[in-house]
Structure formats: structure tokens, C-alpha cells
Length: 312
Image (cartoon, rainbow, N blue to C red; front, side, top):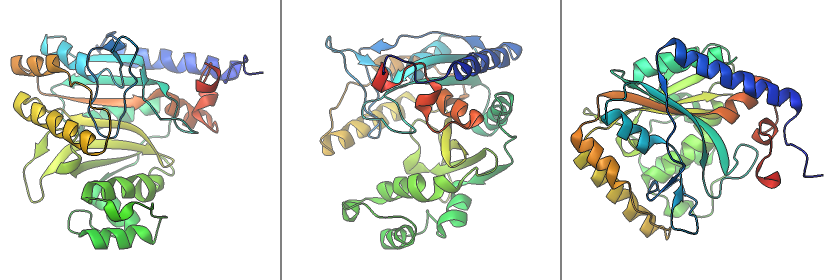
């Protein structure tokens, strides 16, 4: 009976209502809805995210980030997008290779001001008010009993090994791999148990596309939002330096090659846009299916979709 929808009619109505509330939220704030291509000649080179490639050597978007930043550089002002995105290999209770993302950018905001708006949006969507904000260091102290900035690799392995089963290849982990493991399986699942909770100011090595604030240690101006132990959103005070962005893309490509992964071309047009000038801004991507799943208390994200991967 796989012709039937994954979601109930009641859930599909709730989904439609959620999308209407999200659009109303941004309309009230004067944020422009945009629509960018799903297929591109370029792809993400993030070592943790794999793109799906089509037969004509185009790539399905994993995020609308790059074309949206090109719009920002062209003078769009604040923008948002509700779109389907695609990630290879992501399938399970919390993952579907095709899912809906809400992404928006706010010129003039830093990541702290954007956290305020994200908190308002999730409440408007039906979540409890976000009660806490923790720094990355505070989150690790609270839920892993260790300082992620000062601990050496043996100390990280020892602290995490008492709280989660270590993978068989853990002996080959570098520092970032240990931090990813700890955040994914030890710290993250403890966050936002009662209400959505932010973690901010990540290690510089975890910056992705965020600015790095100098200091001891330097910190990535980035945040993640968790609710009931699930990551809902990932936001940045956006990097606008084209030279540093190109260097980060090249470093990511090198890491993908070292891991034996396909190395797609990065978006050279984004670099051109950054050379013209990205306005100082903050941006965030939020998983709409996960948000609806948590608001409705559903068992998995398949139950939020008309047709999940197995029925598509």
C-alpha cells in the first residue's frame, strides 16, 4: 500500500497552516520571499554534506545559501526562502534525502540578533519559548563534563567514551572529528529538553561559513538551535571576505579528497559576488519537517510529508 501518503490528512493541513504562518511572519517584518534554482553547476564542498548529481552533471541544491548571497550582494535587502533541498545518504527517522528548508538572511544583524528572531519564529510556529542560550563551552561543560577548547585528544576520547559508544574508527579521529562526535551523540541530544535552546560561539575550526571573532580562543560567530535533543537550525554571522571564503572552499575540497569523497566544483559565482560586496548580515537555515514533527509530536519526519523517500 505504498501508494498512500506518508502523512495523514490532518498533518497535511497542519503543514499547510505552518507554511502560511511562516510566510505571514516574514511578510509582517518586510522580508522578501525569493525563489532560486534547485539545479546548479556547482555544489557544496562541505565534507559532511554530500550532494546528489544529475545525469547532465548538474547538482541538486543542499541549501539555497549561495544564490541567496548573490541576491544579497545585488542589493535584495532581507530575504527568505522555503524550498526543497537534497542530501545524498541522509535517510532515517530524522532524515529524508529530500526535505524542506527555511532559510533567511538579515542585513545588519549579527548572530545574536538573529537568534532573537529565530526564537520568535519558532514560538509563532507552535513551539515553547526558547528559554536558554549556552555558549559551546558551557554546553560541553554541562553535558560532557569537559572543556572542548582546552582538552587534548585523549581527554576528549575518555570523556566521550564514558557517555557514548565509540565507533570502531575512533582511533583515527582528529580534533574536529571528536568535536563532531561529541556534539552529535553526547551534547546535542541533551539540549532543549523542555524548550528550544541555543548553542553559540563555536570553535574556529567549526566555523563553516561564519565569521571568526579573534580572541583566546578565537570563536566562530555561529549558533545552532536544539529542541528535544534535535538540531533544528544552524545560523551564522556571515563571512563576507572572498579571499578567506575561497581558501575555506579549497580546504574543504582537500578534506573531501583525503576522505575519498567526490569533489564537486565550488560556486565561483559566489566568490565574484563577495568581491563586489556582501552586506554585513546574519543568516540561518531551519528544517521545516523537523519543526512540524516536534510541534505535532510525530514519531518521524516521514509522517510530516505527503510522500517520503520510500513512497516518492
